[in-house]
Length: 424
Image (cartoon, rainbow, N blue to C red; front, top):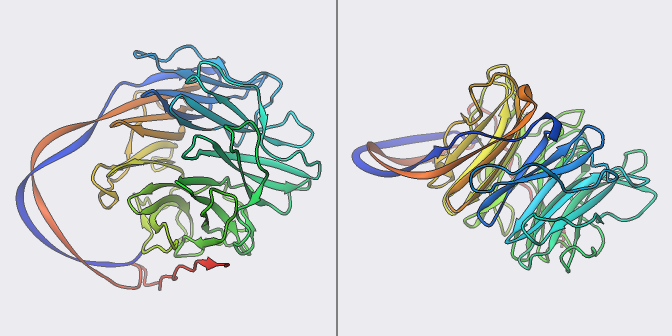
């Protein structure tokens, strides 16, 4: 984070701006339906929510919005599939197509499975094995995106049977998930090895694929991006995204997330490099992976901010996370409707009428509608809330920012230059 000297010129003017208008909270699932780690996606402009049922028999479940409320929860996996109780599921959608990936304990060694729907979530397929049937390796922590042709690209972690030699693997399909080409090591050119319990994520931009992951280089737990220009078949370019090195002798179990934003990759993640656990973001050049800054969204000293998620479209960007600023975990939203430079401070979007812990938020944004889900631990349920973008007119002051950038931060530390590795 670089120190900035700001010269401000203020002129009164009439501002035609936009704001978020929140609807009421809805309960998607209750205790008997399960309430583990919800994910939300948009199908035909309506949300579908998936989650884990962790009680026996373990299953993945879903519920769809019917125009007025959420339909009754239904199973999307059978009882013998045994989805992990820790690291999933993940969902990606496009049109009427939905792909869901998760870790399964039903095989001899844990494996990555996929299910799919081509009718908007009305029905789901049987499981399709994504990770290799290799008795010398374990696989877990799957994630997924959809390419421009509607095919799934899956990332996951590979280990030896004793959980050593972690690698971030990318495996893609060319036929809607009927089968997969085989794993490619996306983290190969990063120093050290991937952080062993931090899930990767991906951003797809036509033929370019960006793999985001946390790395472990002699206990330096920085976030990295690895780039493929052929949709994940090969990776040849990798870069460290952090100004300061987060030195930690154990895995923090938190991952970077990103979206395409203008001509850049907008990445959000947790870092504890300053001694404070903060959610930070930067814009990274899509071509050469260089970046110009890392910034806090809403720094809270002495608290833990974690598990950020991001959605964006056009000039609008939405970032959610959980933190314990009031000594009880809660979920917060920072947003801007006119560019990332205007991100708000964090606001709570959870049901304030119910006390207790609220965790693991997720977000989706489409057609000027924001969809938010989270776990309400006190009521053993998954909650959903929607917001739409509304217009208002107000009198405000115009600030003209002239920024003089200095090459040190507020604590006087010299920033570390980004160092992309071009291996070809």
